[in-house]
Each structure stands twice: as structure tokens, then as C-alpha cells.
Amino acid sequence: FYRLEMRQSDGMSTNGPHHESVKCTSWRHVCVEGDVPGPRTKLTAVGWQDRMVVFGGGYRRDFCDGLFEYNFSTRRFTKVINTEDDAAQRPCARRSHVCVIHTQKVFLFGGRSKAGRLNDLHELDLETYNWRTIHPPSQSISIAVQETNQTTTLEEIIKSTPFLEANIYNCWLDDNPFLPHNAVPKVLDVDTNLPLCNSDSSQIRYTIDKLLRDIPCERAAHSACMYDDRWMIIYGGNSSLYDLFLDDLHAWDCDKYRWLRIQPRSQTKPRGRLGHSTIVKGHNMYLFGGYGGQALNDLWVFNFQTCHWREVVYDFPISPSSFHAALRYNDHMVIFGGSFGDQAGDVEFEQMYALSLQTERWCTVEQAGGLDHAHPHGHEPARRLGHAMLLHGNDLYLFAGSTSCCAVGRDQDYFNDLFVAHLEPPSLKSFLCAYIHANSIPYKIRSVT
Image (tube, rainbow, N blue to C red):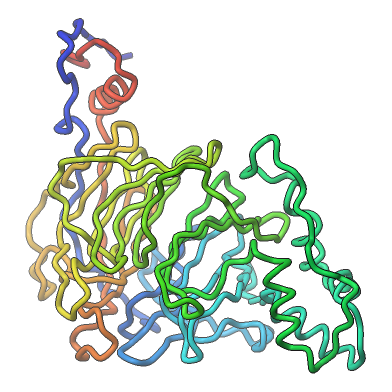
């Protein structure tokens, strides 16, 4: 039982940002064993059960493939070698891609490889470590045409390709939470009975672009987050097709295996960008920072029920940052690292910050503890970007990254070190203060005993 003592507010700000702080221990360097992945940046890592699963990244001008798992209990890395896996189904080496986890599956989308930017989609089963490629529609139709070796129609190809049929005919109005209630069906303005053959590659591409605009184009340095435990939300990035910073929103249905494009209905929206971060709480997606011609530190909220963007104006002195790492911890968005510019060496972000998702106020994460003299950087990681960060319980893990924004950095600019810090859950008084402030309750908390 707790005793809560309150008094009526005088109308002034009652529970300021000093009540919203997040605390953690100092960083501790983890001495790991086994098949430690080489130094890399712009990789992905997901946590599942007692493991961290790592894929991809870049080292100077090289692209990394290989799948690794780290066991939190044994502190050991293992390179995953599955002899029963179909090598043709594995994703190619890449960096600046995204991964999300849904039940026991990891979905990997996009990124940049030696061939350029990508929009392929892959699925990894975490029980068997088997990869499966989900072809992008343009590739699927091209394959279907090549396999027929005869003239056919687009309608026949679509109906013979389950993924395409679901994406074209079923996704626009059937169980689509991102459309207004008065939405009308899309009308196909191309002739699906148009004869196609192997020589019609340009015609095929044009027809696909007409039919399947819900599919995100090739891109890298975009963001991904999970909404409603079903949708992988893709935002932004940089595309080689248009050579611009993207500002589009797409949703991958992890249950029905289909893409939906989300059309914002607000007049204002964030500028296109890459190297940003997004996290979700409830029906809101929070977008921070990135690079869109210059490093950014703006904060936006997208509501999936109204499909409206809203900018959050704040006066906290947080630097612009791209290629930082962000995650949700309780009711906070925690970020670390990143670059404040577009030149090599523009890496300054070494402080950890937290955004209260109740009050939409920033604070500095308070770290306590002594130095870790066993590591050359002392008690905290070197400044870096393109690193991976994830939670295991209340422990915050930080892995790899680089200090260089360009692909020709020196060997010492790339890391494969692992750090951990323990996040302290907010006190009951801190939680109640944030709740009262967020809901404009005209009372102040005097004590909680």
C-alpha cells in the first residue's frame, strides 16, 4: 500500500521535466567470446529470448552478410551456419537496412548493397534460422513471365502469383486500418488483359508501377518499427531511383503478407530524410532527427488512427543527429549516438537522452557509477554512429558502429565492442507526476510513502 499526499495546484506548471528523468548505471564493457563479428556500422540487431541476433552492416567500402547470435547468459557470439538453409533465399550482404521481429520471425527490408539500394523483403525463422525471400512485385512478375516462355496476360500472371493477387485485389479496402471510413475502391486504370511476353520488360515495369504503388521503392537508411503487433512501418530513407530524401510511409502486414501505403491526411508533415529513428507507443509513432540536406533535431508524431502528422516544439538543447540509435523504454524514447553533420568526424553525440512519451519533454539520462578502467574508453563507449542498441530486460546493450560518416574511414574508426548499462525503472512518484502533467490534473504531489 502507498500513501499519496497531494495539494491543489496554483495553475502554474506542476511537474516539470526534473520529475521525468531516466536513470541508469554507467556503461560497462562486456568481454565476449566466440565468433565475434568483425567491426561494422549501419547493421541491425534484434533481441529474442536470451539472444541478440545480428545481421549485415558495412566496413569501409565492404558490405557484410553473415548471421550471428549473442547469448546474454554465456556472453558468447556464435556464427549461425545452417546447412539445411537454401542459400538462394538468404539476403545479400548489405548495410543501412532494417529489421523487425514478429512472434518468432524477423522481417528484413531494403538497404544498400554493391548493386545499389534495395527493396527486397526477407523472412528469418528464429527457431530454425531458415531464410525465405519474399520477392518484390516487379521481380515476381518478371520471374513469372520468364517461366511461361510464351505470351500471356498480366491477369494470368497475377492470379498465378499469390503474393501479387493478395496485394492487388485484397489489400486496399479489406482490413485496412489506415484508410478513412468513407474510402472508395481503387480502380485499376490499366488493361490486365494486355498481352505480355519476355521482351516486354519496360512495359511490365510501367504496368507494375501503375498497379502496385503500395510497394516501397528501393531505399536505404530508412526506419522501421512495429505497430499493433502486426504492421512493420517503413518511413523515409534515400532512394537511388529518384535521388532524393523520401518522406513516404508504408506498412507491411506481418500476418497477411501484403504491403499498404499510408497516405497522411494532414497539411503539414516532416521533410524527407535518412538516418532518423522511429518508435511506437499506442497509436502514435514518434519520429526524431535524421539527415535531409542537413542534420535534423525535429520531433514529429504520426497518429495511425487519424493519419495526421503533428510537430512537437520543444526548447531542450538536444543537438541535431543522424544515424543514432533509439528504442522505447517504458514511457520514454531513449536515444544514443549519431552524427551532427555530413562530414567524416562529425560525430559528437555521446550523451544519452530520453523523451517522455507522456509529456513530450526531453531530459538527459542520468548515469551513476565509477569508471570501467578495463576498457580504453573508460566507463562509456566512444562516440559513434550506425550502431545497434537493444533492451534485454532492463539492460541496455550497445554494439558496433563507427566514428566516420564516410565509407573510406580508417580501420580504427570501426567498432565491434559491446557495452551494457542497467536502466532503472522510474519511481512511483516520477510516474504519477508525469501522468498528472500529461492529463492536466490541477494537483501537485507532495509525497508518496
